[in-house]
Image (tube, rainbow, N blue to C red):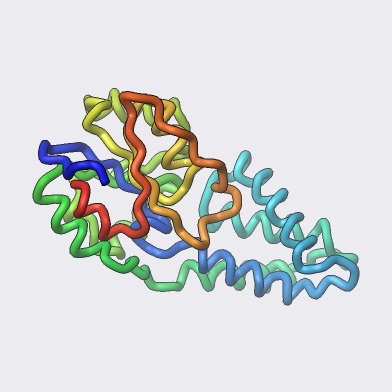
Length: 235
C-alpha cells in the first residue's frame, strides 16, 4: 500500500454512484419498462440491448439525466411495440421514470464521515455531469454541499473537460485526484489529462460507463479502493 499522503491535495469527487446511489433506480425502472412492454418475441436481454442503443442516441441530443432517459424509453417503445405509442401509453412510460425523480437521496456507506475527515485536510470539489437543474437538486438534497469548496456540473466528463477544470480552478496536476466509480468518465479521461485518479468500483455502474481501466503513466498515479471510507487510509 502506498504511504499516506501528508500534503494537502485537491480532490475532484464524482457524485452519482460514488457519494449516493443512482443507477440502481434506473435499473429498476428498466425492469419495470420491460415488464410493461411484455414483448412477445424479444427476450429481456434483447429488449435491454435496444434500450442501451437508444440511450446512446438520446445522450447525443438530450444529454444525461431523467429527461433523456424518458425520451429513450419512449423511443425504445416505438421501435419494439407493434402498437403505436398513444398519449396514455406515453403517460405510463413517463410514470416509470418519475419513480426515480421521487426517490430520496441515499448516501452510500461511509461517505458522510469520510467527507468530514477529508474536508479538514484537503480541497474538495464536487464534479458531476448531467442536467444542471437535476444535479443541483441532488446536491442540495444530499446535505453534502457543506464539505465542498465548489460544485462543478458539466455536460460531459472527457479529457477536454478535465483540462478546462484544471485551468478554471488553477489546479496543480500532480496534487489533483479524480475520485469516482466510472472508468469512462471519472478515471480514464482524468488520467489522460495528466491527473491522478482513485477508482471506487460499484457493482451497478451504468453499462454505458463501462470501460477497461487504463494504466496510469508516471507521474500520474492510480489507486483502486473497495469503498469510499478507504480514502482515509490514503489521504
